[in-house]
Length: 116
Image 1 (cartoon, helix red, strand yellow):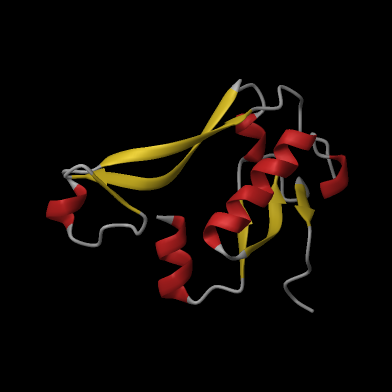
Image 2 (cartoon, rainbow, N blue to C red):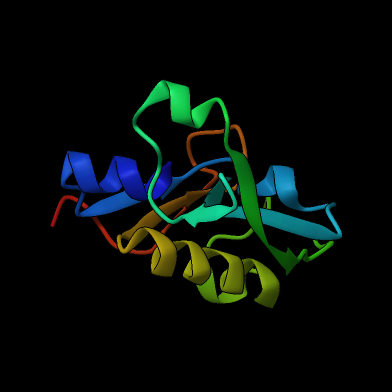
């Protein structure tokens, strides 16, 4: 759905929120397609009748089991968190420019300033 959203909205960059919520997971699942009638659909089905008959296809990545909530620079994130973000960028084909790592306004990592 992220790829579909980025494509139809013509996004230049995305904000990834709630990265800290994933901190305690052993594995992280990313939906990379949809199984429909023994076929794998790479694109998000826009037809609700087809979507209702789909099963998600996941890529599984290792979690990081380290807190991200006090991190202020991308390079200081756990390596697996960095890999996760980079993989999302590859799949969505849009740069992730800000990553939120907590509920507070200042709990965000600005990878790229969207205002410059």
